[in-house]
Length: 114
Image (cartoon, rainbow, N blue to C red; front, side, top):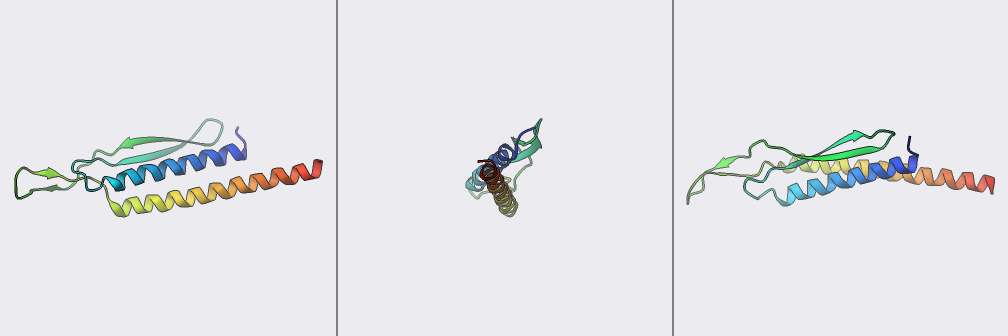
């Protein structure tokens, strides 16, 4: 079992990874045939969180440009990415608060024993 500081740190790292993936998706939303990625989170053995990133293979909208063949647009949904960013922001805030609380508890214990 990991301590509260390590647990909060893994949560912060997971939120950061989610922000990075959403930013990459948003940056490529206008790139033809781009496939968005998603972050999956899972409890790690002993506590904390582990992340993995996977591509979502669903097709984007197919359009017919005036000059030629059909083109598949990206499958990025900007509204979905904004929701993911809000979730990541809230997770980041919660884990930072937990980290600050763990730090305060340790300082209080040190003040008592020193």
